[in-house]
Image 1 (spheres, helix red, strand yellow):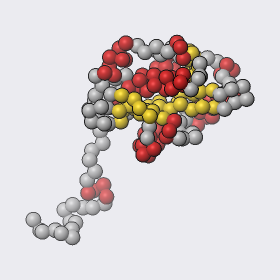
Image 2 (cartoon, helix red, strand yellow):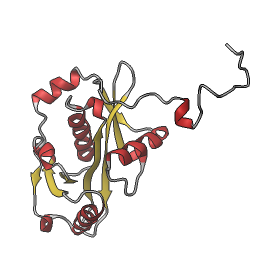
Image 3 (spheres, one colour):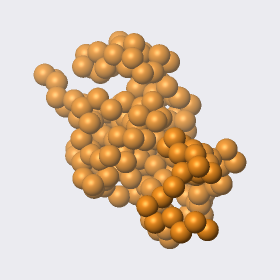
Image 4 (cartoon, one colour):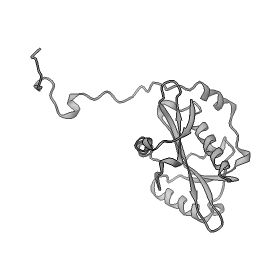
Length: 194
């Protein structure tokens, strides 16, 4: 399992999963994303994004649209996506990053602190209001000093052994009935009558 930059050809995959998970796709650019990939079968397991906000008092960095496919959850995939995003933010010269998260406890384990909306830069305050009104009513602001990021050992160990888990309620394969075809009555161009 590893995390790498998203490729342009993964744009549709990203948009489909962002929509499916009810995440934020505002100002979507695939080049802002990272993707977690299983080394053995090359399956995509999770993703996340850095979004840079230009403001009068300097740029601000937001981690957003962090998602893990259901069959990969609970195995440290999201943790490593967050780690890579924080690493990239540091490489870009940011000393702190923000996140407007619906599940703040998840990010708190990495060193993120919950802050009051008034402590957000104005542009992020507007984003928080927009997010709460549209896709995540329970979103709260969090901030991380990059040098205080920590990865719990248990998540690092889980990630090393990550494997897709069988979902008991996975969708069944599509059949002729799904397309309005009665398989008992339909004839086909090359039907041999057997």
